Structure formats: structure tokens, C-alpha cells
Image (cartoon, rainbow, N blue to C red; front, top):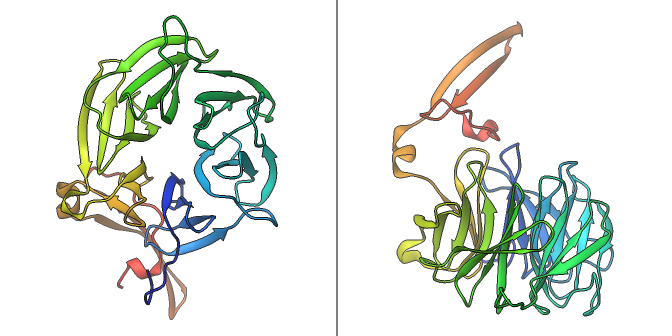
Length: 305
């Protein structure tokens, strides 16, 4: 809020960028926003002329394109890396390539798009150019079927889908063949999932954030809103190693850091002093955390000289 007015409403998802900023999907105010490391809104996108219709999740392909699912619109919007709207994928309906309430989405390493369609209890797969390929997740002799599919993530050749009611993370191959459960214990109210670099999953679970190992089947709580409460729909690790969480209930993006990281301070090193235009002096500065990892996205307001 600012002076009693909401800057955006009901965040459902987010997508960290290499410059330290984060794309935030605001379901309640029908927009996506790019917010920098200081919490300043740098960009506000409301979609094409007719606007987004309840945007829910966001993913990015290797060429920088952004994909935004629209829950009430029954479609996926395609934008370029700057947020300019380009086209739609899918439409309302129950036919092939259509949606009734698309929610979570993900893109695999080959830029194929997977869309969780909550209304039809299925997952639809699209080629990198947006062509519908097939749907999967129907009840079969070895798969009980979805009751409330929410989060989805692709790691290598495996697609993971979590069911909120059954509290299970299921495994499928990229052709939609069921491979069995990955995690069956330790989940309370699972929703959005994001893959981590080491093959693990970051899962939003009510007011908690979990690190899940699908290979080992264990669940480890690594973050919590504590007494502040709320409902996290998606969490992801930003470029500076913090966890950004879309807190739908509290209507804010919550940033979580390890206590030891917050207490340890930063390394600041002046790389170069340029004084050839004195009295204008330019400093080239590098900032690192306690592990000597670079901190990105800072600007003039973060320094006192």
C-alpha cells in the first residue's frame, strides 16, 4: 500500500530476472508488474487492449518470451521479454488445446509449454510456437486422476504435478505417461512449484515454503511466514539468493532471507575511481554477500558516499 491505496492486488505468481528484479502476477488488479530489489515498481503491464482476464501464473522461454495464464480468460497470453503483448494460446472450452480455468504453467528445457487446466483436471502441452500437442492426466488403470492439480515443474525429462487435495506430487514423462508418485508425505496445502538448480523443487505450501527432493522423496521446510500468516501461492529464488513469495492473502510479495545472511553484512569493493571529469567522480563498485556472490540490481539509493 501507499498512502492507503493498493499498488496491486492479490499476487499469485512471480518470476525472478537476471537483473535482480521480479515479474509479479497480480490476479486481483489484472496486471503483471516488474519490481526491483528496492521494492519499486519499474513497469506495469495490463496486456492487450482488452486487458488480462485474471492472470494467474508466469513462465519464460529461453528466447525471453513471457507466458501468462489467464484463469477467467481461458487462455495463455504470449509477450516479448519487455512485456509487449504478442498473441494468445488456447481459448475457452473443453476441446483439444482449450481451457476451463488455466492456472499454473511451466516451460521445460526445450521450450515446450505445459498448462495446468484446473477446470478439466488435465495438463495440456504445447510446442514452442504455441501449437497444441496433447493433454494428459486422465484417470487410468495405474493413475487415480487429478482432484485439484496446482503446481507444475519440469526437470530434465520429468514433469512434476502436485495435487492439492491428495497432497501428492506425481511424476510424468514428457509424453504424458504416468511414472508414479514422487512425494506422498509432508505436504499440507501445496500450490505453486519451481525447479531449483540441484534438481530439487521449491513448493509453496500454505504459509510455508518447502524444499522437496523428488529423487529422495523428502520434504524440508525452509521458510515460513510465522505469526504474520498468509497464503503463499508461489515462491522462487531471486538473483541475489533471497526467496520471493507471492503472498495472496496478505496482498504482498514477501522476501525471506536466512538470518545469518541478514546479520553478516556485505563486502563492498571499489574497483575503479574515474576522476578525469573532476569534480564529477565515478566509482565502479562491486557488492558481494558473505559467500562472495555478487549482489545485483542496486542503484544510487543503496549507497552513501
